[in-house]
Image 1 (tube, chains in turn blue, red):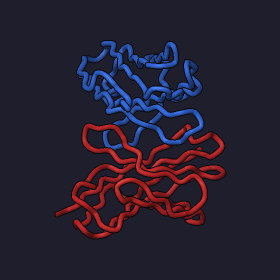
Image 2 (cartoon, chains in turn cyan, orange):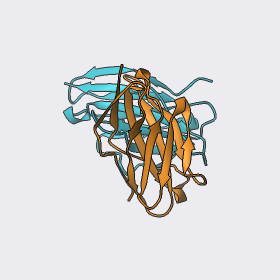
Image 3 (cartoon, rainbow over the protein chains, first blue to last red):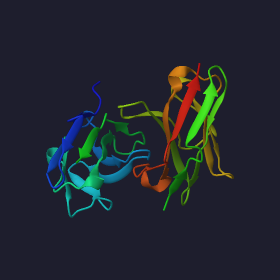
Image 4 (cartoon, chains in turn cyan, yellow):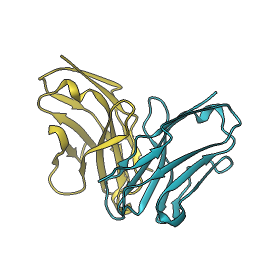
Length: 113
Length: 115
C-alpha cells in the first residue's frame, strides 16, 4: 500500500514569492491534514479536511495561506506571498474517519530567503 | 484546550539499557494518547496509542507506554535500547470526544542511543 505522497520534497524561494505544496493521501482516507513543523518543535495543525470540506481551519493564516481539496482526494496548500517566517517543514497526513492514527508523508522543507 | 509537555529535550542511553521518554498531558475529559517517531528527513511514524482499557500499551519495534491517569502521564519505554532507536519522539494528545482527530503534539524529545 502506498503511503502519503508529498511534492516537492524541498523548495527554496525568495520572500514575497508564491509557493504551492501538493499531497496525495492514502487511498480511501477521508480525512486529510496539513501541519507546519518549525525547527525543533512538534507539528502544528493548519487545516483539516473531511472529504472536500475544511472542517477545521482555525490555525490557518488566511491572509496568505490557502488550501483546497478538490474531489476529496489530493490537496494543495499555497502560500502567497511567502515570508521569512514561513520557513518550515510542511507535513501532510491522512486517516480514516473515526480512526485515530494519522499517517504522515515525508514533508516539504520550505526555505524562504 | 489540550497541551502536551515533554520535559526532556534530549535523552541519552547506552545500547542495551532500558529507555524512558517522558510525556505529560492536559486535556478536558478522557484522552487519546499517541507516540510518533521521526527519523531525519522523514515524516512521523506511528508507534502506539492509548484509547481505553489496559494502561500498558504495546506498540511497534518493542516500544510500550504506560498511561497513568492520576499523574496525567504517558511515558514511552523500551526494555533494551538499540542504536537504531536514535530519533526524535513526539507525544500527542486528543480529547476523546473528538474521535482523536485534533491532535496536539509535544515539542519532541531527541533520543540518542550510544553504542
